[in-house]
Image (cartoon, rainbow, N blue to C red; front, side, top):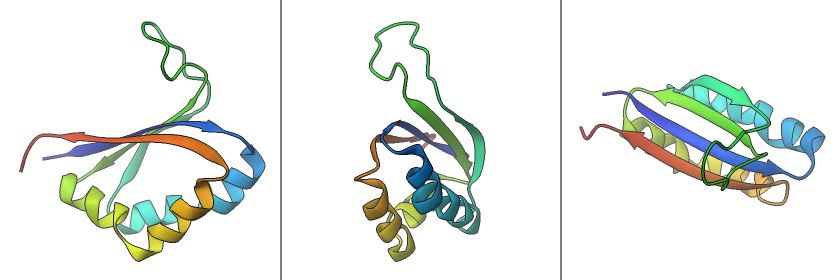
Length: 98
């Protein structure tokens, strides 16, 4: 069953974020079987406000196991480390159980 990774991020340095993280991560997501559904700045909160103003990224994957393979991969570990000083990210995964 399809699964989705949903990310809300407050980006501190957009130019460096794009160059050091977003571009190489996009290639890696495709390598691991994911595809972008949405990438956009300027989240508007309708209720709650927790992520208002953040950027949002939603990617679709074959299943939760594919997300885990990507997330736990050595290739992504270095990109996560590059992202941390550039953005505060909240990352979630959702999908039907196996």
